[in-house]
Length: 209
Image 1: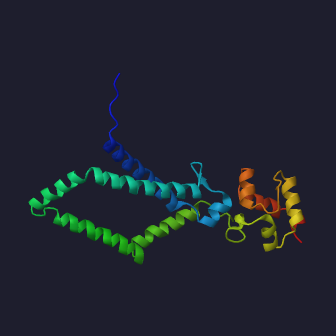
Image 2: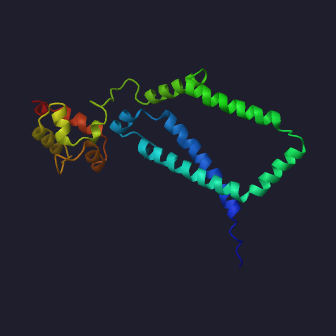
């Protein structure tokens, strides 16, 4: 039974389509994802992926899209040039369309940079969506990137008794191998959020000096 040959052009076209679709989804997710300090503190996920994972997917798919687009243009360069020459022979029949596309693109870029309506409202809608995930809840960390600090430094920063912090964590089923482990790494080890560990510690009066 013979197999059909691998068609590189078809592969490139399908890859451009796939990466474009996934980038659209990941871009929308990043548009509505909670702010970084909240997402990392609460270990926010969507479809099983964290904010960091969604950012990684979007960034790497962007690079893939760029690379396959270059190959797509390379393999279809003759077709593209023939099309443009044909248009030229037809006395620039696409002049109005080209001008309209350039104007619209420049308006979107310029309006977004200057934050003109309705581009400003689009960003405000995204900001509202970010806050809606935890509306009415106190999910702010004690300070930015608190989850990245070692337990010893975290305790010093907010004036907690380190020995009591370690004892409470151990009693609640989250023993730390070292006072230098970060809240984030400890949370990942026990499949909880940094916020949950922090609230567990802060609920015990022994941690206060």
